[in-house]
Structures are given as structure tokens and as C-alpha cells.
Amino acid sequence: MSELLNESPTKTIFSEIRKWKAEKDAVILSHYYMPPELQIPVKDGGVADFLGDSLGLSVEATKVKAQNIIFCGVTFMAETAKILNPGKNVFIPDREAGCSLASSITANDVIELKKKHPGVPIIAYVNTYAETKAECDICCTSRNAMSIARSFDSDTLIFLPDVYMGQNLQKGIEKETGKKLILWHGRCEVHEQFSNTSLSTMKMMYPNAEMLLHWEVPEETVEESLNNRAGVLGSTNDILRYVGESKSKEFILASECDLGAILKSTYPDKEFITPCIKCPYMKKISLLNTLAALKAIGTSEEEKYKVELSQDIIDRASIPVKRMLNFS
Ligand code: SF4
Image (cartoon, rainbow, N blue to C red; front, side, top):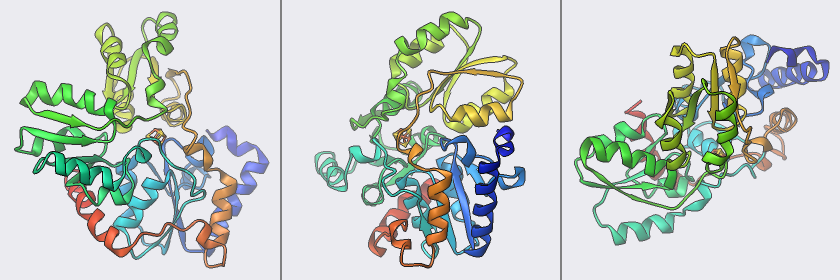
């Protein structure tokens, strides 16, 4: 990613952002699916104070000392930062940065599920809005979903909202413990595109490449991909770790395209092949609107970027989120 720093307009915006961060007492938390220029850490000349997956960013949000957090990710992630750090101001450079999974379920849907399945524990993937989280027993990320599901005594659990991740989780948990999952029908519009068809040409062209599959990829793709070759099904962090431990030089990536940027910069001697499917919500965030959000802090413009949650929602949603962090 360092070549980006040689392009002077980008270098100028980086300097501007760093200057305004200091002036506004702000830090930038940036997700692995951000455009590559927002993934460059401050220590390498970029602007990200912390780069991570949803769980890493949630944990980091609890440690922030600065008064203002600029969250370069999507809205449900910025809400989680606010839930965990309610005394801080949290800003997102584009409040339209949504998520098809988070939008697939509302708090009322969860209330209806509870009426239909009384007493069944509800695990909410962290990709849900704060009001939805507030109705659930515990949150999880792709990194800790399995250990959280294992921890309940109940024979049946509700897992929401991602149906594909739920099916992948169900397979593992049923085999190990016999537990059954009741699933919602949400889908990540990025990961659902990783069908066997979209990966088949790549598999033919790179017969020795290992597979990197995110939990949100459809179950049939997982089955077919890992049936006859090595690879990993896991969270973003599992994928990063797997590549570091593997001796292979070639990998087919079935996850958001810009995860390839951090993989390539961390492991420059390895090759990553991907259909390059980008999340349209993550790509709403850019260097320019990050700079605009920073400049707006403390002015009449700041409402445009500020993440606001009622105290009641913060109080109730913080319970499942903090329970999740105890598993980290
Ligand atoms: S990649 Fe999928 S789960 Fe992540 S923000 Fe985009 S739509 Fe939501």
C-alpha cells in the first residue's frame, strides 16, 4: 500500500487528516474492508490509529482516550463504538453507510421471535443495529460465534440475522454438541455472491491455491471448496492468521475485495486471487469525507456525522455487547 504515499494528492490529504485529528482530539478506527488508503496506519504515514475487524475495533473502542472517534466502517460498527464508549463523541463520515445484514432485522422482529420461542437464548451477530441488539441475550462476531454458541446449556439457540453464517455455524455446533439453531433469513449481499460458479474458473486456473472463506459465504460454497483442497472457513482474523501459518504461496479469497489489501501488504510474497466483490456500504467512506467529518467536529455541521443513541438503547444494548467481549 506504500505506493499510495508516493501520489502527492493522497499524501496531502493524509497530512491534512493528521493535522485535523490532533486539532480536534480525534482518533480514526478503520475496518479491514475500507478502501486501501484508509487502511494505512499512522506509523506507516497513513491515518488509521487502529485497523481491525469488528471485534478488534469494538475492543479498541473501549480504550480510546481522545474525546472524538471517527469510525471508518459502517453504521452498526460506529453504534457499537458509541455503546461501549458512551462518554465519547462518535462520528461516521457517511451516515448512509449501512449493511444488508443489519437492515434485515428490526427490534420488533426479535420481540416476535421471543414470543414464538419463549426462553430460547438469542445470539445476535454484531452486524445488527443497536435497537436490535438491545433485544438479544448476547452478541457475537465471526471470531467468537462458535465459542459463544458452545457456552449455552440450552439445546436450542436462536442465531440472527445471517442465514449463511448460521448454517455454517449450525454444521459445526450440531456435530460437536447436538445443539439446534433457529435461524433468521438475513444475507450479506457481498458474501452471498461467492457461489461455486463465481469461484470455479479461479479454482481451475489455480489448482494449488488454498481457499480463504469467510463465515458469511453460502454453505454449499464452503462444502465444495473445502472438500478437495486446503483452506480455512473463519473470521477475517482467522483468514489473516491462516495465511501467515500456511506454506502455500497462492490463495483464493472469498471475502470482501479490499481485505486483499491488508493481506498483500502483510504477506507481500504471497498471491491473492479474488472475484473482487466490494461492499457498496463500506465504499461510501473515503479520505475526503473522513476529512470533512473531522473538520465538522465542534461546528454546526457535526450533526451530519454524529452517531446518536438514546440512553435507554445504550444501556440495554451494552449488556449483550459486553457479554460478547468477555469471550474475547
Ligand atoms: S460486507 Fe456484508 S456484512 Fe459487511 S457491511 Fe457489507 S453488507 Fe454488511
